[in-house]
Length: 304
Image 1 (cartoon, one colour):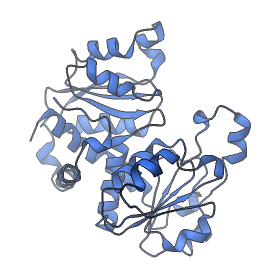
Image 2 (cartoon, rainbow, N blue to C red):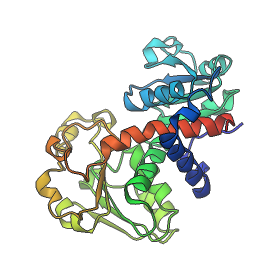
Image 3 (cartoon, rainbow, N blue to C red):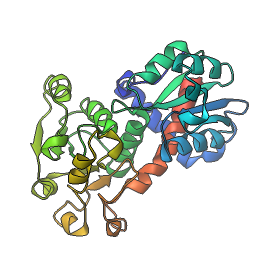
Image 4 (cartoon, rainbow, N blue to C red):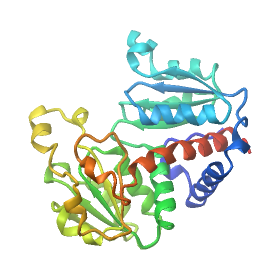
């Protein structure tokens, strides 16, 4: 039995295979419409989610399977004090695969030890979000066609953003990728990722507080929101939340084939007027998430 807790548990080759399956699902959806008939996905979301939870559910339904679960901790026995291990152990008797989101780092890993079925980490605190990373990689592949040699800008909350951390680790395995980190000083990329991922892999990187300065260099701009729920001090959140807002004017200096990604939800860090720009790929990105999760469910269940 295999789980997916961290994106690095998948090799570059396995990620390529998953993207190939997802491409085939897009081309031939009818071939996959009942492949999970009789199978059940449990979505255990101890933290609110719209896109991730619904894309998992849509993925399972489109594969012909069924879904059960909960969308917040207060609607589960966690509200009574039940441990994650006990919850997951019980749910694994009722489902064939589990997708789990939790506010505490490491909770899905703990869950995987207790489960009799595969567990997918759907986000754990500020740590990891591997299926969002698969979505991001799949979108870059479909939009640009390759990873090698790309200059990727990460903008906004780089300190707490689990999607940023996961994507950085995944991209570090491709050739000649350059990273550009754009953030306020208070929300810089954690030093441990630079020391443990970038430097050992000889990844070129730049840290800056200016988006305008680096915009012409970028092949991909990965925008993030400043997450209120990650702050202990509301005054700090209010001071920093509008630090970087992407507008058509700021995009004027970008490459014609550059792509803007965002894990969503957006608040105001991307102006609505950017949506009609062909370089804005974030809604296509959200759609891609369903297909790559379909591919992952099939792979973890051992279905072809």
